[in-house]
Length: 410
Image 1 (cartoon, rainbow, N blue to C red):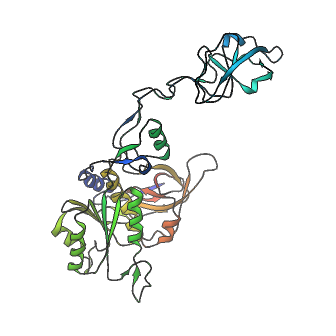
Image 2 (image 1 turned 135 degrees about the horizontal axis):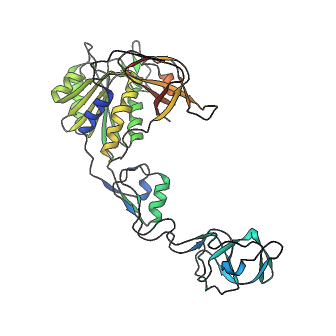
Image 3 (image 1 turned 30 degrees about the vertical axis):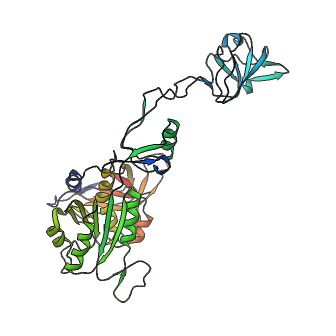
């Protein structure tokens, strides 16, 4: 059973995403060698210049024949044919002669005049002849010219992220270089007097800055080029200095200092240097999120709690980085799951619950269970999670067995 809550006046996640992405343009593409194209976003269609395969060839090791010559063959009454030659990969065979067979290897050209391949397992060899024991139908095990693709067929579409398979296909079509989306330059900074860099033992009342290494890795994962500018002190001048240094990049992502505390300067300085279109979003974790511009750069100010920072990066910064590269899909593909336990959430906030997935025993949707404490500073439940469950804002109680959307994290 589902309990409904009163709607909130905060901006919805979908509305904030639309507002943000409407400001984002696609960067000019660049040409890279095929060995550097893995994971990049293709910026042009790739068409086949020729038929592929370029000739009729065999899909099996066996014997090339004419189907009419073996139409009465059986295990009890095999057809005996003289073997007049061989076709192997990389060599052009001679013409086939009616009433004969030609030895043929997988991938080798079909001899002109032959129309069928009898697999080796259906034959036995007797000196210069072969005994065909199966009446193999016409065109069996023959891969005709153009069976895979025809000349002019578009094989790879712009906007898709290139996989190792795509790289192989592009190479097969003769491409040594590819036009791909430019990787956006992403400036990262953190704020907080309490923060020390990773690897530095924290003193009394200090914390290790885990957000910056996490966000640097997340930028790389999304296809951007990160530059970490450092940790700003809790002073207006310190925050201003780092934001001014960041404004020459394509995207600026800060963490912490975006709320209403006495020492939170990011919102005020960002408003002075640029524009702010969104500040608070109806979501948990991560309600305070700054979205706007910083001179010519897109600006996203994330909350300081590590989980909030990770979730808001996923929902806002990652789509920007992918759109700048020209990606056709800027968000991860969501999946449907079924809750394995009752869950509750605050009224009016779209909630992203860290969850672990278990395969269903009956072959149905995966079951999702909380990965642990859902507090916004709890890293263990984040690192254990397979996904984020997307619980709509108007629900407060989600019964076990409810179907919800999930954002895969692995």
